[in-house]
Image (cartoon, rainbow, N blue to C red; front, side):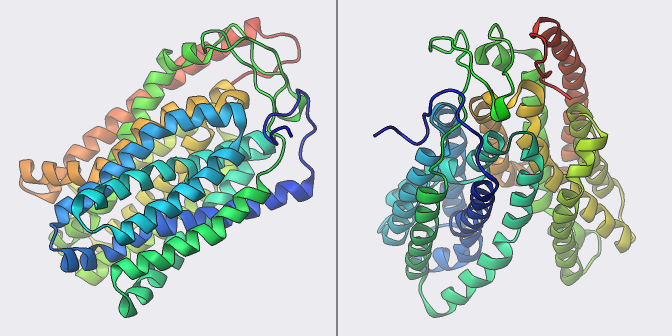
Length: 440
């Protein structure tokens, strides 16, 4: 029996009902995956520390190492996705993720606790946004922006659901028992959905020269021809545009997540009450959702390059405001909402960057490389932020450094935009008649 993910070239596009099932299924599994693997940890951390006696730094380091490993594994996962599709990757992720959380619940010592988080990080590369985005990009084609926006809006409720759920479980169970319950939830919910809903023909891809595979010409989603075969994945990964965009995205992730983690202590130092600072952080979360709602409008009004510059620039404005303004409180809250909106939009900018620049048929492999340093920066942001606070002596000093980082990221994104225009012109000049340009 042939694999459901390696159809003959020219396989028909999925019907509306199948597409709807894929989108709804992924909305559910992303909520559960992020809730169990990511958000539950933030709730259970104090209990883990109290029951094990391990330091908060050691526990957080295990979690961060797992996240960094996930980013690295994502490079390999991206290539498998590009060739085989999401069915194998995400179904395997459900199995590995369930095993990792079960191992976490059982781990009798720190070494196995660390190993469990490494396994969980590996699973996250198969379960989190990147493979889901690749699935929607491949199957939804030109409508992928709307599908990805819907997915991120739904998954944004993961913390809303799983933070209180985990807390409620932890009131009656130990952290190990809580993770045991969550492992069962992860396996029983995500595995059957991935196993059944993602079992569809995967759009053919063009194998480019320099990738180690023989070169062949296929159609992209919707029967649209892919880009010219002379431009390989390796060429893209070494291009000036890709390197600038990836560096800009990595610096943006560092500034974005470090500023989120240390926003409350900064605002308290600025004279706000702890309640007011918590509300500012919460409204920043609402800003993430608000920003994502407007993303489809942005795709119609702005090119991919301009969207990246605007979103990263907005984060720079927000972080610079935090570093330089002591108040009043409404202004600081407005900056928190701006930072949240930028953070939410950046998720979507990163999700559509590769397809906008270089086409959908190479999305999974190229985005896997793009996401690796971005995810690493996100995972290491709390630690790097703590080191900067120690070096500068204040949270204001941290935000001043982050403002500089965001400013550099904005400049690099602008340079990447210039390079993308040149690449687009060059690719258009060699593309066959009727082929779409890789940027828009």
